[in-house]
Image 1: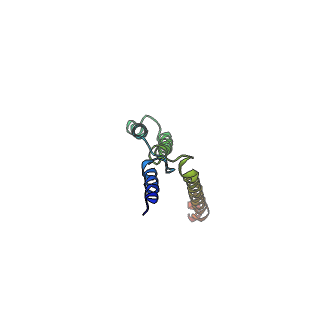
Image 2: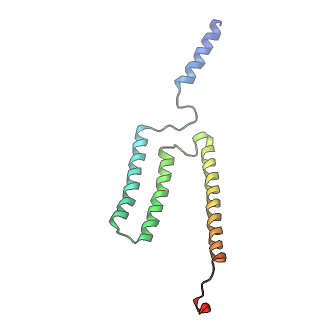
Image 3: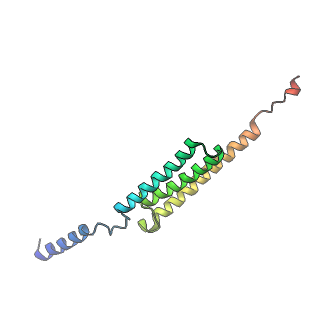
Length: 131
């Protein structure tokens, strides 16, 4: 290897390993992990307290817990999975949106099919006809 080729290889090798955060990935900081952890603890403790204290009606408690669960999913995606519109050139967000569309279609279709099967296939019990 010539001296020029060796120097060129050394420069590109330094540039590649010297800049760890220029790879297109969003890396979290210690502070962001602590914020995410704190939010996760709070978003877990409040629904736990609501259930254990029994301060609200069961249906309302269920809706509130569902809301806290959705917020906690978003917190985890932002603070721990580092998902935003900038990471991976926007492909992570596009993949998330596609996944959400598929899940909504699958869940809504399943609920629709089960509802109509229950409505149309369950036998009608008429005790007066038997007597």
